[in-house]
Amino acid sequence: MPKPDFQLSRNAFDRLSFRGADGELHDGVVPVRAFPIADPQHGIALVGADGHELAWIDSLADLPEAMRALVEAELAAREFMPQIRRLSGVSSFATPSTWRVETDRGDTEFVLKGEEDIHRLSAQTLLVVDSHGIQFLIRDLAALDAGSRRLLDRFL
Image (cartoon, rainbow, N blue to C red; front, side, top):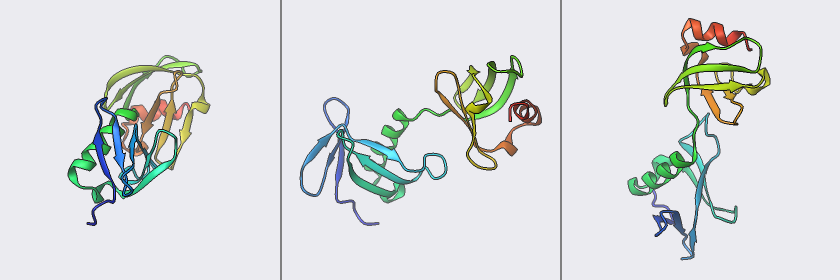
């Protein structure tokens, strides 16, 4: 695996710093996934505070362990997309309705404003956006239990 031509570190304010091959230091660097749902391990841009891309990472696996840990920690801090594992119930089949769900981050409730806030990303993947703009992912419809699929079918 070739060594990247840049360095990453944390500055005194715990922000990601980037030093390119030219030696110039950029603070406040943000990693951005090109395909956060379909292929989260590949295609990551390191973007400077000015919004310009500083480097492209084809695969996180290509980075040395310490650098990969920095990028993954920064991504985890930025991204919040709980995955719905089960629908426990809905307040009504008319919207807006309150959904009670089990996610990979625990149980929660949220308000679905309308059916248009359920977005089909693929045949088996849905993105559900609550009334506050928080995105919930259903990665595999077939993996949901029968009761969850029945509740969800009423909104699709």
